[in-house]
Length: 72
Length: 141
Image 1 (cartoon, helix red, strand yellow):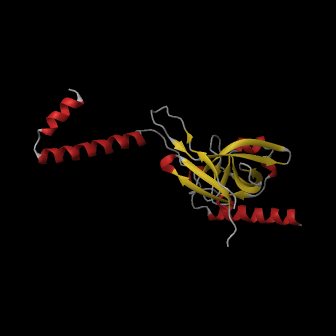
Image 2 (cartoon, rainbow over the protein chains, first blue to last red):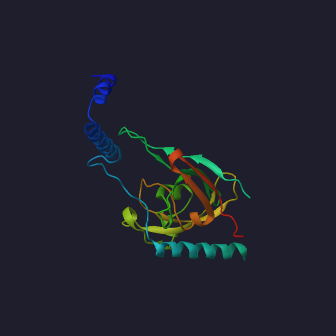
Image 3 (cartoon, rainbow over the protein chains, first blue to last red):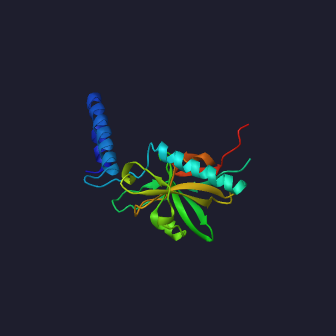
């Protein structure tokens, strides 16, 4: 069935069924979107070194020392 | 006022039928007489910059000579890392010193994180149109 034929039939539906159809399509779109984002058993590595304030302090101190050497 | 430089998001591997885009910034790294052109992932969730092992080697760094250890979190936690400083140039902006956690992990992206990349540059992301703009930090008025 073509989309044009389908739309003609949809136009004949009562209002409540049109609303149900909208809900169905919205759910379908979300489901397809989710499938696009994540694939089962696929590995998604997260490399971000999050919340490493101690490491950040070490780096910033090293930078300050380097800056002093360059300025001096 | 310095005009920002605009870059497109980089299109990544789409072998799963997906088109993924991430903000990778082209930059030139230099250390002593060595220099190379590479790209870094702009990662606002990363506390520090991360230098992949192989890029450190290409810049002439020697692991045994770098004594300052740093502890990383996440997937990188199980790898040793050392603190190093490398000069970096973005676009035609003046070169700056970037401090990196040089990791022994292989096949990791070069990460540009809060310390100290985001202390040095103002970055604006426009994800909906897959672009970002960058310029050196502006002096406080």
